Amino acid sequence: MRTTYNQELLAFIEKHPTSYHVTAGQKELLDHAGYQQLFENDAWEIRPGGKYYVIRNGSAIAAFRIPPEDCAADDTCRIREIAEKKFAGFMIMASHSDSPSLKIKRNPEMQVDQSYTKLNVEPYGGLLMAPWFDRPLSVAGRIFVRTGTGMECRLVNLDRDLLVIPSLAIHMNREANKGYTYNAQKDLLPLYGMEESRPLAELLAEAAGVDAGDILDGDLYLYNRQPGTVFGANEEFLMSPRLDDVQCAFASLQGFLESEQDSPGAKEGNQPIPVHVVFDNEEVGSSTRQGAASTFLADTLERISEALGDTRTDYKRRIACSFMLSADNAHAVHPNHTDKADPVNHPHLNGGVVLKYSANQRYTTDGMSGAIVRLLAARAGVTLQEFHNRSDIPGGSTLGNISGNQAAVCTADIGIAQLAMHSPCETCGAEDTEQLVRLARELFASQLCIGEGEVTVCHG
Image (tube, one colour):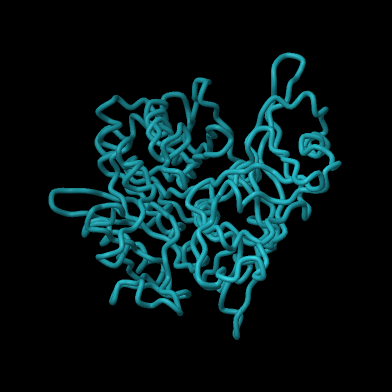
């Protein structure tokens, strides 16, 4: 097993505490690998053998590679001409950059009893509230700063133990251990300092190297400062903030970059286009311009097709032979609550990649897409395990069925099994990150051929 994946994952999570930082971190890795940034408000000029990425809102990113031509590169030799008779589609892996948190409201400082200062915050996503108490917290996100000609965006991370949400002592609530209903406006406000503390805007301005008066607006979140770790009797577990879903975004990009060396060769122009996409705002329903319900993926795929000289019909042909893995972490059977899991289909930590099913299609996996995943996994030497919700416990939705409303691609939902989902500190198996990287690598190096009553999945 490549144990460095775990260390690389933990280092990436620690360095990138918000969706904006995750996207910036992925941009840095893509830049280093020779990818070129495209901008949505520009005309796209893409070439055979080119490597590109596009960012929306600073928090969603899509990267793709154009296969090289199978003839000498000149102005008369174009992929459109090669692909006249056969089309290959897009091989896509989707994940998301955001995690449940507490977002700082405008005018956040609140004075308490002529003594303390606390910050006014509100929940972002379906977070588990109790684990946020009594931990070292900090603030990160983005701010928009006035310039001489307009404004610019700056990422900020105060990167020190700055805040705490203190629990109420058992002496003042003797019933606390019998269950407690948290009030987000009352119980979750973090202690920032004493009454005379510097305003938060000054700390942010100092971190960004600007004047506090030049900060126009921003999106700022609390995050757990505790670093991730590998633990267990045989170091078989991994604990970290934001595993859901930075772990999948990390594994997808690793597999995407590694697959360059074993991508399919030119075969009558029938070469797939690998696409790594990370959406934002999955934790709040995906209905934003950078979420899975937006046109971000569809816009990107259409513009790739258009830049290759495809007609609208050609694009639809590409979509018809495309495939997507929707990667978002899954619930492992809980050691203290086995009754919450399906009696048969309940994954375990270190059990391999989870293939997720739902009769109501909240997960998109069906017989066809599940079979494709099994072919990919077998070729990559990846172990699969299955997940169904208990029939009497409804599950949440994720990226696959939402993005399918914009780009109707054959899709399967997968993830890594974890405990304490939506806690500020989550746990997974130490062996499973590598398993997902290997599956992603196989996906991006494969091509899908759909014929009359038959689907062929080819590698190289």
